[in-house]
Amino acid sequence: MDSEVNVLTAERIADAPLPTDSTLRRRRNPFVQLWRFARINLRMMRIIRAH
Image 1: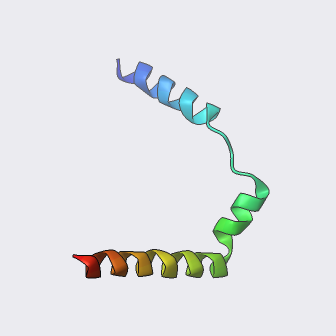
Image 2: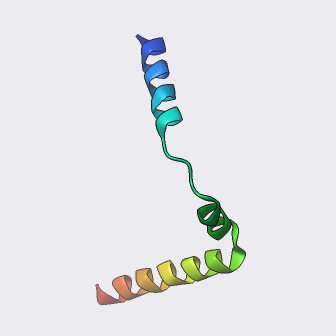
Image 3: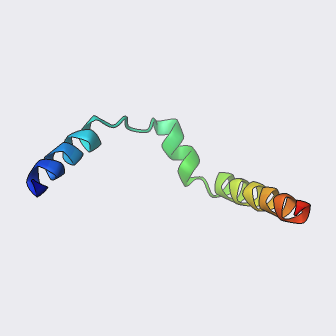
């Protein structure tokens, strides 16, 4: 049973779409990461203040 589950999981992973080159470049860009970090933190602060 366990090996059947592992095979099914491996097939699903193999069928998953791969990110494009531009997506990978954005994910690795430190400026984009800094912007996303700041944006999510500001959003969390706004939600916390509302409560």
